[in-house]
Structures are given as structure tokens and as C-alpha cells.
Length: 148
Image (tube, rainbow, N blue to C red; front, side, top):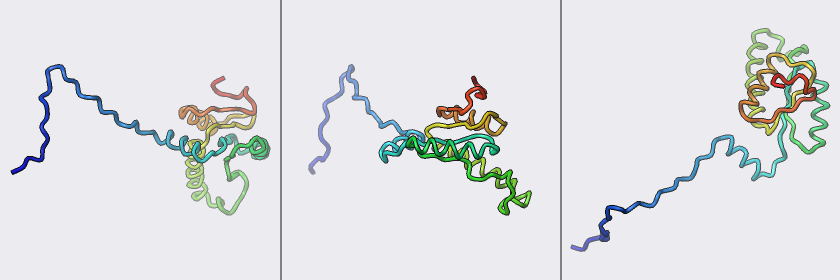
């Protein structure tokens, strides 16, 4: 009966096997950055700040867009009356969802632009979150940077 295994030379006492290299798995952040690069996407900037600065956010959006960047910013001014958040219980649930959505915008963005001359607790938390992810943070009013 024929043998199908090939003969192997005995391994000597000083034989070292070739190290097997495994491809480094990319983190989700690295995969996202790579996908943006492959798609030739412009830089994405997320605007953060107190909703009281919605007019300034719109102005910052115009300037950043003119500079060739994709801009994402808060989409709801819950301080202004609207039927979508007229019920207090629904408004509270919506606020939680919008906060989660804004953190997702921060993860998507390449950089953060903080608008306004006041930093409240929510914006302070967004700045800390962005910095924990290694995102560069710019300020329209650098004197309000909590880490300055």
C-alpha cells in the first residue's frame, strides 16, 4: 500500500521553527479611518456646545463647510417648544437618545469644534469623551477650554 505522507527530516536540537505572523486585527476606529481614507472623504467635524449657541453653530457650520469639511452638529433644539418633545416623559427619553446620538457623531468625526463662550456639564462631558478617544478639540473661544 503506498504511503501518502512525505518523509520529514528529523529536527535537530537547535532547530527553530519559522515564526508564524498573523495579521494585526484593526480596531473599529482604525477600520473606520481606513474606510474614510479609501472613500477619499473630507475631514468630518462635529460641532458641540450649548444649544443656546444654535445661531453660532449654524455660522460655524457654514465656515467649516466652506473650508471643505463635512459637518455634523446637534439637530434638535429641545429648549424651543416643539410637538416632538411636548410630553415631558417622551422629552426625557428623547434627550437620552439624542445624547447617545451625539456621542456617535463624536466617534464618527475626525475633530470636534466647541462653539460658544460657555461650557456646561453636557458640553464638558462631550469634550472629555472626545479627548478620551484621541479626537482633536478646537474652540471658538479657547479661554473656555476646561483643560487649558
